Length: 96
Image (cartoon, rainbow, N blue to C red; front, side, top):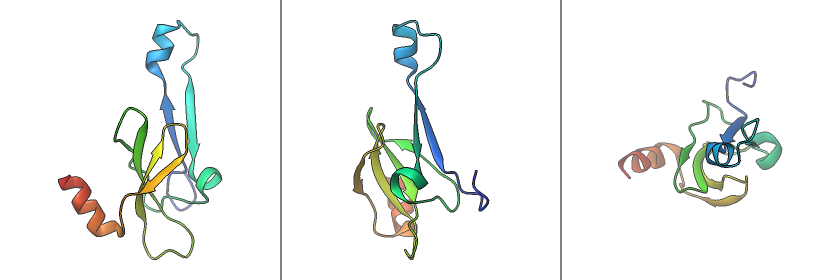
């Protein structure tokens, strides 16, 4: 957690690979929003899988008027911005 209370990271565990390959530790991919996207999450991170390889997550960039929902890959690559405003997008995404 950052000092503002927003979460900086999402950890993705590859449980299927862990059991399939009989590994001693669970493979993790850590997506760090400040490091990877120069962004933060003012009110916490609500990551949700959209497909097997992408997640939707809220991010806020400095000097933006709102936080937006973005689609990123589980490898940490930006796919696209899904919304144009947080409040409308949250409502539409929940109705989705």
